[in-house]
Length: 143
View 1: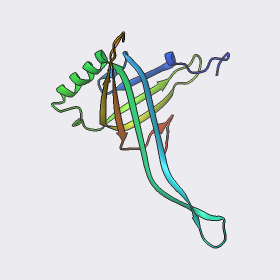
View 2: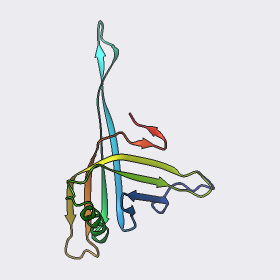
View 3: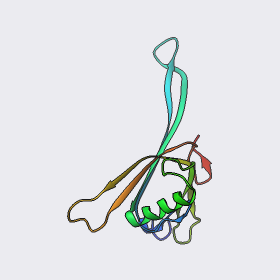
View 4: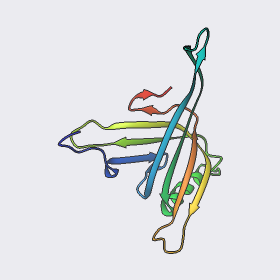
């Protein structure tokens, strides 16, 4: 944090395979690792058991941006659900600080939602994805 300034929406840049998103409303991504306590003698855990890693992401964009995304898929001669896993790069830039970069290296679309209602001033499309590789948080892999 420099001079009390923290990251804000205007400090975020999101890049998909066809270019940097301009007309988008939000990006959400998360991951998790299954863990559970393993018990032996007594009532306290003696260790932990580890399971699968999973992650997901979603991008909400204006219909105009979604049209650019579909044009990218058409150039690849595939459907949206048929696109090979692609990378999403999220960069956080703050004045006088190094850029923080999170990489979602292998995203695969599993749901698309279009939403519009009477009185809306814009139309949004939400793309949900599963992550096939761990998120890399500012150079450190989550798993």
